[in-house]
Length: 76
Image 1 (spheres, rainbow, N blue to C red):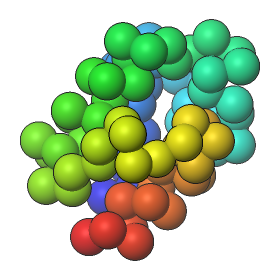
Image 2: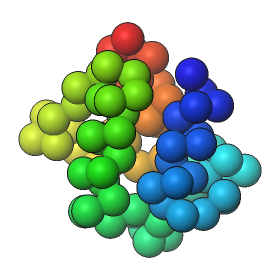
Image 3: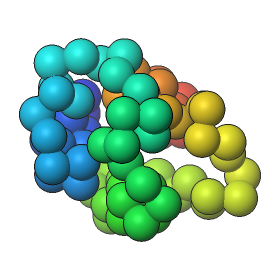
Image 4: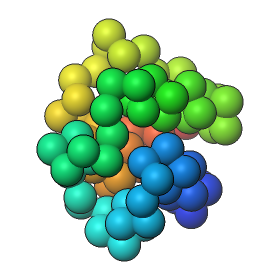
């Protein structure tokens, strides 16, 4: 699951650093913006069957690859 998520994240962020540094800050480093965030949540739902509403989470809960992986594991 982690490998597939990192591939997805690399596609959305258009940068392979998300696979190299799992603690990279996605929003502060401009790897992810509001549109990318919405795309990521939609792709997570399609790929993993995990629905995450943007209104139920804070960006700080999903701002690194490690946090995204943990959230998906917790909801699967």
